[in-house]
Image 1 (cartoon, helix red, strand yellow):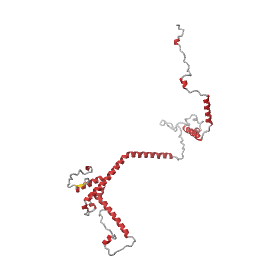
Image 2 (cartoon, one colour):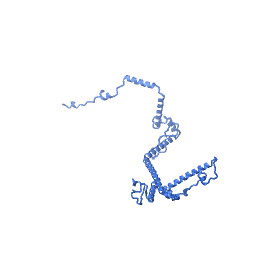
Image 3 (spheres, one colour):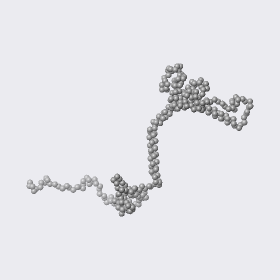
Image 4 (cartoon, one colour):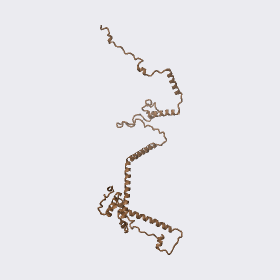
Length: 319
């Protein structure tokens, strides 16, 4: 084979043009038919001929206004020239040349490059009312949040406080019961007619409250009797009545004996009453054991000072 003859094995062929029957062509949108085109044109003509409702016109006006407010005249190429915008022309007459406000400085690279935007108010509220309302709502939300936190944190504290109050009330009842037992055992000494401060301080408060209540009751009785005697109704007056008869009939002045030191200050009693109920009960129980060999928890008296058989001084020892 000569060199002048071309080797058909080395021949190259140009690429064939893309066929219209390829897969990409089959998946593309089919061309619009004449019927589809006429239907589309008819729909567009009907939409143009139909008058828009009032709500649609208002919606379009709102959209145009929002778009105008969101578009800066300085950044819009169609209106950036003063000759194309009345607003920029007026600002140019007043000396506005564009760029950042104030003197240029390296420390203020983010200076304002456009005027302050106008915030149009649609409501009827006065200036500052909206910010005041937001402030009140924010404060109310903070208060509500603090209340929720206190409710979560204070739940255990509330239970503990209720438990302590109930425990203190139980101690107070036991103190009163122990004082009554002590007073009953000191009944012989009470008949001797000693003064109020002569009563042991462990149950002196009980005696003082009872004496004050008795004095109040007698004062009310005397007042009622005086009002009855001073009434204008005529009554029988026997001249032969003696002092005992008049006292029995309530015609004389009632006399009664009150503790002389009832109205005086008792610092010892005040100090005792200021103690915690548990401490006061402990002192009353110790007084009963020391003076009468009596255990308040066992509810019995022992023949000797050792009080053999008593578990101990506290209520827990008797459980």
